Length: 202
Image 1 (cartoon, rainbow, N blue to C red):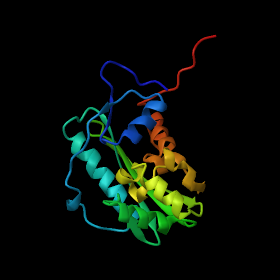
Image 2: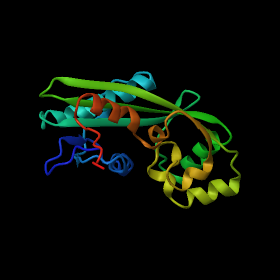
Image 3: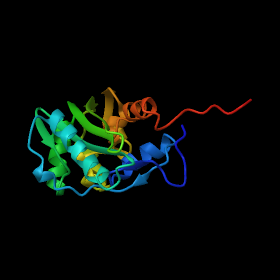
Image 4: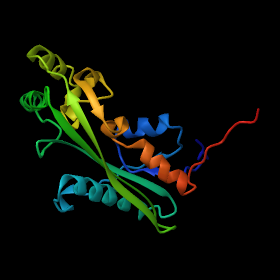
């Protein structure tokens, strides 16, 4: 994968270290400029629509300042029985979320948007992954809570971290659960000629 240069054409409009890690592992060169939009101004809608609209708003906010760049915006939510599980604000909230997820299937939605103002090009969609948790014992829940990993994670877990032991099975994109559907994002970037595949000579 090649899009390198001293001045990357890609901007990740997110402060998420997980999204940054995913793009770095994919070999992309990019800048990180977090979008600080007021998320309360985005109208509430069904979860799969809301995350896409919010990702568009985040990308647009940065793209207005850097119209020549390709900007990636994203937003991820965890949904259980139609209820959004955000980041727990306390030990009790984290415990409650993990008990709800124990032995159950939930959905992770990530909306993403890739756009370039100067080229008048934009693509956005929502990717869904189903995640099945193992049956958690009270001891496992208490141990995981006290690692402190749940507290800045939607749904109170990190599939790419210590929380990997909670997940029995997934149906769909793994990177989507981490925070960005990398396959879909890169597929669009390749189609637009933003990144390319280079094969070294023999």
